[in-house]
Amino acid sequence: MKTSELARNESFEVEQREWKLRQRKDHGKQLLTIVSPLFLLVLWEVMSRTGILDIRFFPPPSTIVQTFYDMVMSGVMAKHVGVSLYRIFIGFLAGVIPGIIVGLLMGLYSPIRHFVQPIVMALMPIPTLALLPIIIILFGIGDLSKVVTIAGSVFFPVVINTAAGVLNIDKIYLDVANNYQTNQWNFFFKIALPGALPVMLEGIQMGQAIALLTIVAAEMMGATSGIGYLIWTSYKAFLLPEMYVGLILISFFGYLFSLILRALQNKLLPWR
Amino acid sequence: MEGKPKITVDGLMKAFYKKQGSVIALEDISLTVDEGEFVCLVGPSGCGKTTLLRILAGLEQPSVGSFTIATETNDRPLQSMVFQERGVIPWLTVRENVAFGLKMRNLPKAFITERTDFYLKKTGLERFASLYPKELSGGMKQRVSIARAFANDPEILLMDEPFGALDEQNRFILQEELLSIWAETKKTVLFITHSIDEALLLSDRILLMGAQPGKIIEEIIIDKPRPRKMEDVRKDPEMAAKFIDIWRHLQEEVLKSRE
Image (cartoon, rainbow over all chains, first blue to last red):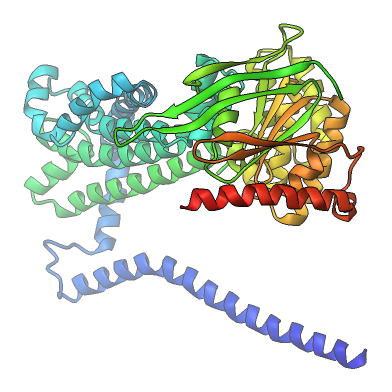
């Protein structure tokens, strides 16, 4: 009895030591993740201050932060960011909502799928940005043309993923629905929509990234405000700190939107 | 038990058309299942037993022939099926899954809650009612499937190898639970399995099926008194003899289907 208890205690101690070691390693890895972007910024700062990087092309991060602060204070920032976010938001919705509807119809009704699929496939490879001149002629240089451009780019990944989401629902759930006499309405809301949701949300996540790429380019071409306009005019006037502020804003919003959608995903899919 | 016929299948055939040679999946199936009877269909895989069940479940159409399920009232669904392991809908909670059939029929809310509670309790799922299926073990998921079918209160129950994916100990437990719920409700059950032991424990009558083409080759009556326990079935020499009898019949069919 005595010996077995000793042996047991010893084995607990051994395992505890192992566990602590693993914990320390995990903390180390977390630290690395936080340090890596900071490391890049510090490296950049040091290199541009010591003249290894050309300060005209790569102004040090401290200068960019200072510029950012000045722009916020003067109110320029709020104007550009506000306009861009408005366009992204409206354009995103104008692409996602029809994308979901058409995608669901394609997934649910095979004649619709066979008719619409070739059209979607043929139009998808055409960059909406290449149509920008026509879009500007049709919709002017105001907000509407940007909204249309974004909507056009966001639509495709959403429509394709939604249709794929419906088609990938395990057949057994369709059997269950049939066997328990599910009507069209319930089939749509209890089976098709929730079943397609995971893949559909991946498409919306992709659409979000595309919306950001599109807004910058669209505002570069025929706009008088927005983050893209800010980047483009700063570049043309060789105000590189201002340009970098614009780029960093895009990166920040991309990250923020991803986090928001990720949180939404967890909220909408508690069953995964 | 000489009840009135509940399920009547008459000269049912099912063929599958393929360009390179069509196959007859079911050939001239005729059978009756009496009211309140528990019948197991046993046969090698590919003998068409699942096809037969799916036809009765309204998920597939027979090529030739017909079947009837006798009804007394109009407000009951004809049949509900207990599916193989993945039949529980992952985006609905345990409670919503059990209530699924009732909700689809737009029954009054209070009635649905009462009936769902009753079967959640009966299957020991009360504590898990608000969980999603991913958090359940395989045995628990099959309890959900069984509760869903019984809660729907259909004329007959169809079960497609519901315990096929469970480990042996869990299977014994669920088999006995199923028998106790069945004993209370006296539903007519048609149950598919490939386990001879399972069929001997559960059935009033076993129908053996042969493969290629699928047909019923033998009928074996199990008149051992209920309630039955796995131990009793294992100990009983008469059951042991039946086991061997069934195995001899099936052996031939399995070997034939391997050629």
